[in-house]
Length: 453
Image (cartoon, rainbow, N blue to C red):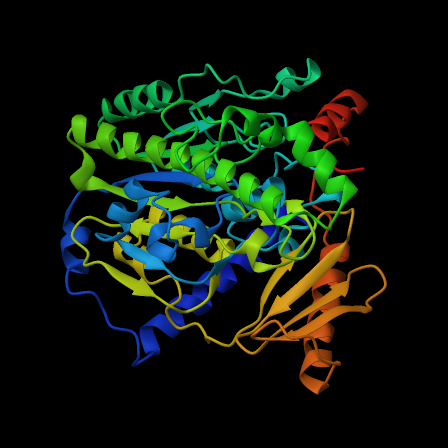
């Protein structure tokens, strides 16, 4: 499908959303939208904590004090209670966010060589064309120029470039993430036009090796550090269950300490915005690209399962002047992506606090695994249906409490929906798809746990 048709389908979704928003009696018009119309456009900061699962944030009910900065931020913002990523791995979820469209519409995935073609218009390109200055910072080797996700950024800094993979290196523990983020905010603040700043932080993604004072914060000791290395986690995951309760407890403690480090970096971004005096005219979005598994369904890490652990992500949006609240309608990252695109195109920033407006709370949410398992799943508030995208056979049907049951008429209807989505994906051929990854990078991505053979 040509890129123009992809954008037309996406724009069609926006039009339907606008029509529903305008006609629905259940959607309240924010009282201060007219204020935004008379002011200069706000800046936009989007922070992604890689592999941060929602249920390990205090604002989502976690007992440990892993995310004090994010929790304080949520108390003065809009928190989305039910957000599922379109995929449990970075490339597909992040490209979905950047496109504001699901994989069956974009056709992205293994068939494009795991890369975004230059012909596709990302959020950063739309923002730049709308007059925003665009800044990007990434610590994930998938969110880089090599994979096509740096398109449209005036400035894009790769702290973990794909070239580092060729030497088999992980993200350097000595990198000054906080300093780089503050410097980027300072640089962005110096222009007259509004700016978009997208930062993709690797923490809490493996390896779970945070620096002091986060290391040991939740009881891990020096003898546990090896367990948090990527090689150890990948080896354990390949070996498979059962895992002892002690091993899982130690892994979770290491992950939580790494999440605490990611939260501190997020807090530093908020401090940097305040330090340069632009916090009151900057929309800030905090989210994640996917979650992380701790053997809830037998797997560690991410990429291969379609369960809440690997897919449920936080989403908190602060719009200056908007009252805090909690939105309970289930949404996905494509909904956020569409909302961000509407914002940079000139819509009121207040619309980012009601991304589920006009949505049927029972609409199916769809997610995809990587090519290793090849699964696709649909969620409704009542059930989850997982099928094999290649054979169309049921993998699992379960109720809202997670209890498995034989397929019924509603489960079969969801399977038909999923089969249709797969057919759309197969029939969508993005223009100018890049060649597949070279063997060296594939080998190094595998060594770091990004690809599992």
